Image 1 (tube, helix red, strand yellow):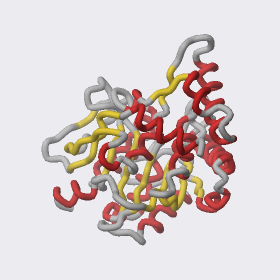
Image 2: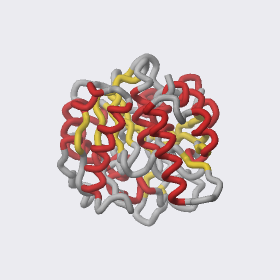
Image 3: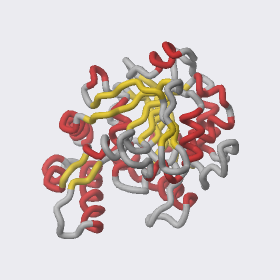
Image 4: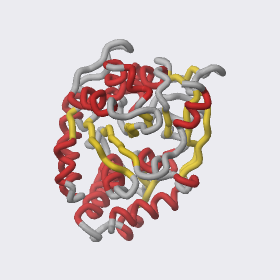
Length: 305
C-alpha cells in the first residue's frame, strides 16, 4: 500500500460500516460502556461479531480465565442491551498471549476474523475495534497476512508519545501482539491512554444524574462504575476514565466532533516499555485530544434512549 493509499484508508468512514469489537469485557467497567455504545450506534455501525479477549489481573486467575469471564460478561451486556440476536456472533478468544512474534494462538475469534475479513477489500474494509490485549487480532494476521489489505484496526493501547513509558495494560500484557499488528502495515489507528484518553473521565454525581434509574442498561453501567471506584477509593472523591468508549467513537468522528487526530509515522513498541520511532515507518493515525463533553453527551443520549 502506498503512502497515499494508507492515508486514505485511515480516514474516518462515512456512511454505515461493518465492525467487529475485540474486548476484555470483565477486566474493568469501561468495556461494557463501549459494547453498549457500539450497539446503540447501529445507524452507522453494523456489528458483525464480538470477540472475548484475554486478560490477567486481580479479577482473573490467568488470561484464559479472563477471556472466559469476558465472554460471560458480554452475554450479560447483550441481554441488558436487548440484543439477544448478537449472542450467536460472540466468539471466544485466545487463552494465552503470543509466545513470540511468529506464532499465533488458536482461537474461535482469530479464525472467525480471518474468515470474515475475506469478504472485504481495501475500498470496503472491515473495521476491527480492539480494546484489550490485541492477541486475537495479531493471531489472525499471523494466520493469514492477506487480511491486512481488508481491515482497518482501531486500538486503544499504549500511552502518548510524550509519556515516559508505554507500560499500559493492553500493551504490556502482550507486547509481541502489539508489535505484530503495528509492524504489519495494516491501516492502524491508535488511541493512547495516559496523556490523551485519560481525560475522558466521569464522576459519581454525573453518573447518578444522567444514568441511574434511566433503564436497566444505564442503571447497571452507572452502579457498576460507582461500586468499582468505591472499592478502590472508599470515601474519596474520584473521576473514572471510561477509556474504551473512545475507540468506538473514532468510527463516529465525522467532522472531528469527538476527538482530534493526526497522521504520523507509526511508532513501534519495544520490550523495554519504550517506542521505537523511525522517520520512514509507515503511516498511522494517532488521536491526541478527546472532546470529553461532546462525546459524553452522545454516549448518554444513546444509553438512555
